[in-house]
Image (tube, rainbow over the protein chains, first blue to last red):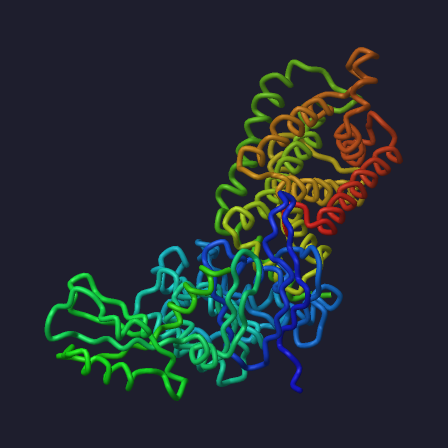
Length: 308
Length: 253
């Protein structure tokens, strides 16, 4: 079995106030995958990232980065990680070039102007290299944060809410950049509020709530396992109530009485769609339009968080 | 040892100094000139020699100490507090750097700046009074050790402070009074016996005394006592910083 890029075992973080920010977290992230960590505000996403990156002390448990203990072998472990934090925290008066070079130096790497140039060009920052960061737009600053995180050639990249405050175009451009990094072998861990982002990017999904990891699953499996499909029937004529013959289908009648919604599991062979259509015909209910809708990751997320 | 990391922090901090060169250099130079005009010329001309040294020249070591003490604390405390305030400290904490390396980077830069300012003040003083440095190596020792030690103290203050107000609190309420009462402008032998004894509780007395000795071979306490005191203070500051990094106090919690 390939060694995990990140292995977290029984990780707990309790603050002095008694708040349990992380509660017995166990997580393995494979090398080269894109792992999306989802969770509502205050769920523990940033705390987990901070613990792995060595920014905060953990109360209990172990963290290994590519097999290296993150406290005993912190130099090797931290050297493999690049972090793009949620906040745009940069030294406002420094130039783009200097701040990216500074980050490379911090991680013990000698100067490499050619490499810095390559990163800045990749992120469309080359023409801004001599600008002070305070003069850049929010989107540009976000790219600078990514450039800083990549400056020491990390094997693992953490992106904490990378799309926060970024417009659609830049978001899609960042997604392309992230995919390119993954294609080059970088392991990506991203936290996001944008379910669409996780749906678009991730290989696996982890959902965290109240400091507990409530689910870790392959995205496709998750969608298949928990994803429901809806059959939406637009009726020819208004009905006031669902006929008793259709009671077993748990249909949902819209307020205007002109739409029926049937939720079913598409993975089942006998999912009830054919029988329902037959029963509708027998009951004299005519449809003028039929549509289907696959439940999104967002629906799954809301359901899981609501249950936990 | 992460030499590139140390050098990055050091250069970054020195770069910040260079960006504010006018404020960094002009301010202490102007203050020194004002001190010489007021104490050296206006008042000093009416004060007799102290230990055979003209008053204007006598206050030079004290003035240098006054400046480097406050500059060391201000530079180092701001250097570490500002990234905490802006949030950029995440980068330092997540980098493969030990606490010794982080401290060397920040304190080294703060001390370097203070040493440069100390030399500038000394040079400025040379335009007003005839200077003599009888023990230049000891002078360099006291200057460097004072800058390093008080930069370490500033570093501690910068980690302890949770607001800009607190950043100023200790320098204003403790360090400045101790420096003024530490013999910057007088010899403690000029005080009544009781206040001489009280003055010996002030650690700055030992620094100024040792530094002044290197200029004029005139001191309030022995050279050995001055050296011992500064080493004790240095060890204490290093001990506190080691504890801060070991516990993560205000940094990793």
